[in-house]
Length: 461
Image 1 (cartoon, one colour):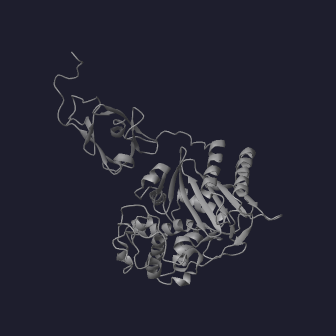
Image 2 (cartoon, helix red, strand yellow):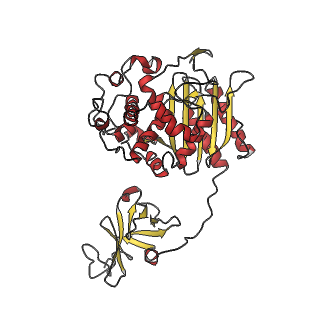
Image 3 (cartoon, rainbow, N blue to C red):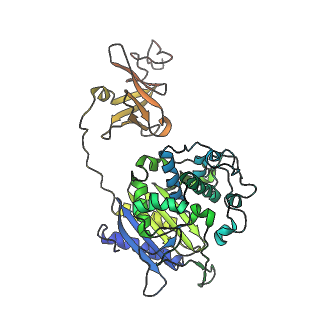
């Protein structure tokens, strides 16, 4: 399959090619492949290799390591959306006898279940999965390292449990469920648990000499849901487009937004570095951009999938070495190159088709005490509350159909906004989670808790 390069300007394509060339050379990678997706379409593919006369293409498989976790998370969210389970359910309710206490399904998705980062020895990535045939072998005698729900602690055994949960509920193997529910509907025909030619071999590059050593490619067995998959830049580009927009055959856009929302309490170092974890997706602040996706590594392979949802640009980077290039950095740079050189052109502004006068009446300036806010009705049918100073609490609100509105983000997420009217039908004030917003600062014509001093505003006399 030849991927069209017509979607990007020549200068942009050259900058992308230069970036991966530098990454492959300085990272001393046997090969490195990458793809860029814009507005749901693959617009660029590039490859660099140390093999003369042959370069891997968009159909060459690489191991993608922990990007596998995002696929597993999608399967779990599907079960939630079908009503089969709740993310607040303790795992024990559906998969008893694991010994992980009261860890919920959401805890495992967000790595807050308190579980160990790895399975007991031997090093699971370089030993056969047959050594750990049962969940007890993956978890060990003491599976917990932290109190449940208290902190983010990345856990491969946690995603092993989620894969087992999928198998238990569906009554079929994890890979079989993944293929029928995600891979085949999305057309990811070159993604699977085992390599199919053409595929890259995994290598270790000596840290102090330009020589290489083949890495073993072990079947991870029970731990497959945490990192087993092989894939290609073409398939992962399609998966990135799905993660950005959703596909109702698989998972809705709302559920994917939930996956992209921070779900784990960050440690101090994570706050400083701008890192957070959602439900099967990593979030990183990169300059002034918020990037979501996932990284992956196994002996012999490095991978990253990076999405800038606001710019609708995504990048996939795959390399066949244990260490060297930094795919997360390369992916972020590929996104930046496209977004900066060819910024997204917004949709044309269009007015609303119709407007309810009682809603239009709410638009304009409001005050919470002496803090000024503007309330705007936007073309998507939402209400947007913005501080007039430019900084402070802001949120969008979705109509509930009964004259009230529910906050979607920030401090007011989940809080209800309603207009409190006088007997004659005019608006007295807005009530937002008990906070009173009036048309004037401490409006004497409105019902303000605590009342307004009858002498009114004054200077210093």
